Length: 203
Picture 1 (spheres, rainbow, N blue to C red):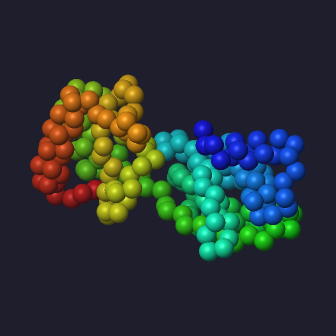
Picture 2 (picture 1 turned 120 degrees about the vertical axis):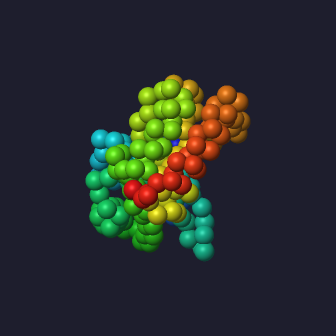
Picture 3 (picture 1 turned 135 degrees about the vertical axis):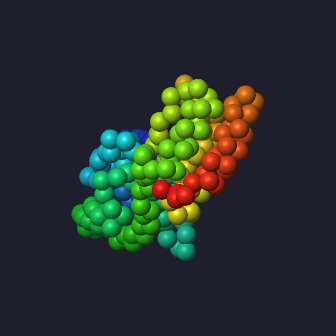
């Protein structure tokens, strides 16, 4: 779980008298609008998509920048809303909180849109076939919170095969991949270049 909201909750529950400054206001902001949940419950924007899963909303950084205290929040938005709708709801909630606390806030919210591909489209169907043919395992699309590079390309799909039932070992200090799985990845990516390159259309 994210330690920042837990730290804010600890400070509020500690009984300590905090100086009435921007740091104390940031503690109240994190506690009041996020708490220890990360599904947008306290912000009032939580919802979920049957395939992509729930919206997640979690403050993960406090820093001083250009003479101001900044609280940075990571937002992952699934299908079911638009960036403009979500920005408006969050801004309204934050501004209402700021008014009740007599606190000045400045909101900067950059919101990327969700990305989903037709599971029956030629590109995705080809990738699923490659995975199934190579591994002998059931091939079905799964949602991912990543896909940063895929989003930079038109009609792209995040194709980073993970072996079902195996512990996820990426994105940590001891990141590794088992050699047999790496061999399968190389085989699948090579096959992908051949098959995708021969499609008449990408979607």
